[in-house]
Length: 342
Image 1 (tube, rainbow, N blue to C red):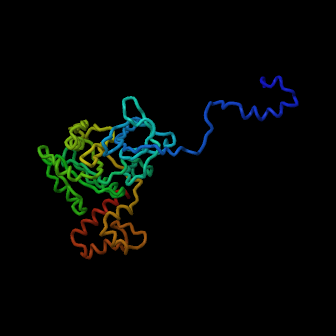
Image 2 (image 1 turned 90 degrees about the vertical axis):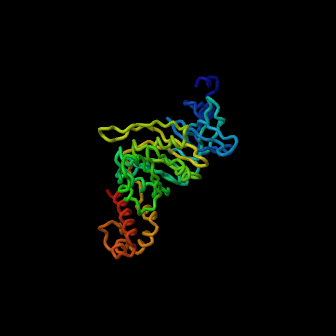
Image 3 (image 1 turned 120 degrees about the horizontal axis):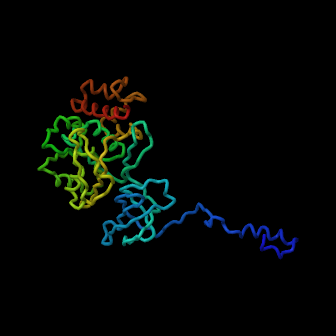
């Protein structure tokens, strides 16, 4: 108490409280508060790629002032995932000029969320893309061999997220995909075929107009080749398939959005597995609207799997009331459910 040395002992007590209140914060930090600024001057942007804690954001989308800006995440969002496709609110320098950095202070409500887990037993989800409304599932007819069960998993994830699935089968010059595609004939999913000399860019472009479409696929199926055909400036790295293992090499390591007319295509890294531990099976049933109506007559807790007792769907199919198409749709539905139960 060196600054009180000239104060009488009688007066020392009344200065004690003053000393405690006026002593500076030893850490030099501001007092914490739960009151956050409203950021009324924030501007809206679309996150089109994420790279090591930096977010590339399109500001002023659809206006003459449209431009790219780089942003970081505000401290209050440190526990929230910010992903490609997110619409966010930015403050700070949003000019996009070299060396500038803005800050993401809010994530706007998402219309859809595409998620995956590490494996089927892991309920911890990883958000891949936000605000998409379509999923373009790219699969090769050969080299690497098509995997129906992996496509099933993509379909489960699409139905769970509320995305419309589209299948693009590539390398049809190497093998006839008819037998493979028969697995999905009952799902009423749009199918586009692509060969070495017949890249159906116009057909796919027509499907992408006005939509935000996330492209997914096994490594080496030609997804990046397709994206480069649709967006010549994309310059996505293209890999080759290992002749010994038949596996593709991961070439795209980031998720990035590209403008396609008035729509968007979001290219994702190739994967060899797709965990579904977070998926609610009821979301799959809702995607089979005709079967969902019949399922209302099923006993409570019915799994709709082949061994489920008194399943109304199975009974109607066995009676031939739904025809061959109904039997195929039930088989597809049960296969998707089995992917979750496996």
